[in-house]
Image 1 (cartoon, helix red, strand yellow):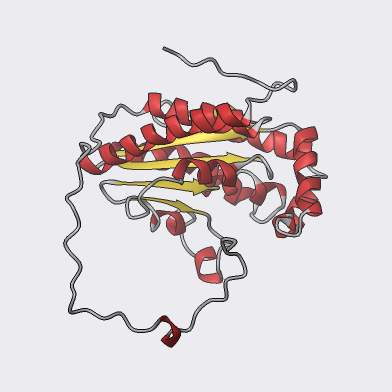
Image 2 (image 1 turned 60 degrees about the vertical axis):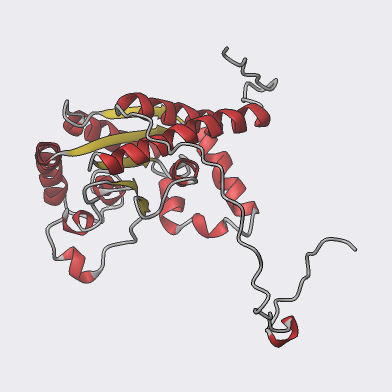
Length: 273
């Protein structure tokens, strides 16, 4: 029986229903993880989108229950001097999954088609070369056996501005509003043109782009996970529920050292007596 999903007066899924649906989808994602490991699959998932589109929060929700030895997320900093002298794709390749692994890229090689071109961090020739090479690069990955999934998180200028303002008000997130973000606010149309050009050149059959409406982050999380689970065929390899054997009897020959001998962390937060 399908449980009815309730929404607030603003059209947002209620927190209770969001958590319930999130738990269900995370459970399925763990099943997918086990299948990837069992079948020696190599899965690459790219998350692109404007600043504040919700890429980091999306990946955090997806990977929350994953085994970090099988699944990891990658968010690269600006390239080093050495990396600038390498083949453009080289610094990303070293983070690719081995057989039985999944990697989620929080921004990827598509930086060149977006922020690098808009902010003039690359030359026009480098930009044009990327648009020509990228489809060939991804076709090569697919021929090699990689599963390449590309998501673009779409957000409006109004919603982006709300999130920027929220970041600035909170000392915990103020660091996220970088100098590049400040300039991006003034270049909305240029970023739109860059995205349109990128899509036109790199939306290929072997690795198509999937657009996620990210205006409401909770909806985006659930919709993206449901989509990915339908995209990759998997079987349930969840271990059977086992009854744990009783613990062995206490060893009467063991004497625990006094707790006072340890350097204890002060209990600022503790259960009231």
